[in-house]
Image (tube, rainbow over all chains, first blue to last red; front, side, top):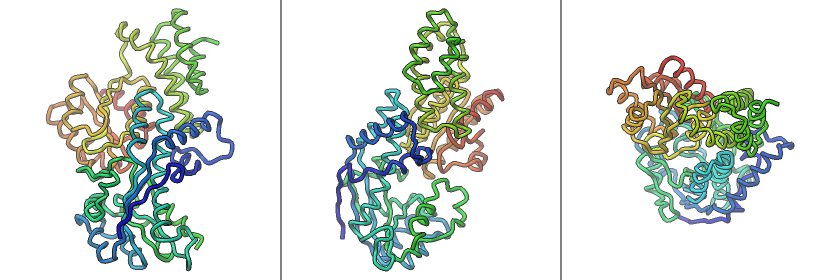
Length: 235
Length: 213
């Protein structure tokens, strides 16, 4: 079933530690006053501009295999194929914090406020990622260890872990997220920029664990597997 | 303290709101605009860049200093232009066609300006031809290309090929960067350099210019 969700900007506000991590700043208690003030200003700008919303639709394993195959450009071996084998429920999703945040970031850059612009960019990126967690809770049940029998819901996205970004086309064709204002450009880039998409996979924690030993892992800078493995490491 | 050292120290301390005032003061004291630029603003940003490379300070600290640098630079630019002072080099920069991501490209532009380069920022979603046209029109010796998507990376090769087709290879060099872009990709498409991050991009551009781009 296809569902539409919306949250307040406050509900989607990410933790300071995650924002600072994206800025390359260690999460230390003694953050300098000027960085503290910058972070506060960026969080306030986010609250003024964000309009978080999402579309999610349940999908069977067989249907998903077709979406995942996409245009046939995935890596020869990918972890998601193994993860799928143990999945209990799947849902495709597209979520966004809206276009006004990106417009504010660009405006700040043009007004010679690069520090605030970059900090707001990190707030928005962390918030978009947080939407996947909020979606998991509302659609597939408890997340991050709260589920019965150690069930975890984690997100996997085109462009990562061997799932070629061209897979966005099949995902968008299935979900048709235009009603929340998210579109795909010819390069498979989502607009607004601060949007996330992919599949939420619900299943035993162990299915989400994998070693970053695939061919494409060598050049991966984001390493989403680290976060994913950390999320299931206590199970 | 020497006013130029004071400008540099203010930038290092992130006192961005003081820098413009100090630059005005230096001009009133009849300091040469080029000295204010080199021994004040760029000297300060060099220290900031070094501290960033050593991880003694962080990206937001650099960007706060950059705001101060811009405020000072705005005062100096017309004077430097009047005196015909050349910049460290002219670079055309942008995110390639199909890619709307611009935060990384913006950070590179800020760091390059902080290092004294004249940066022509073409923005995002820039077709290959526009990069090369702009480099020719404005006499740039380096083209900087940013891509955040594997689907847009081939546009980088289009730019490299166009530079060659127009007989500009050697005179106009191409540096590429962005999350999915690697040194191997740069070599594969025949680009002259790969910038791993904004600080590294400045080093690589300096090297390209020094090598006679």
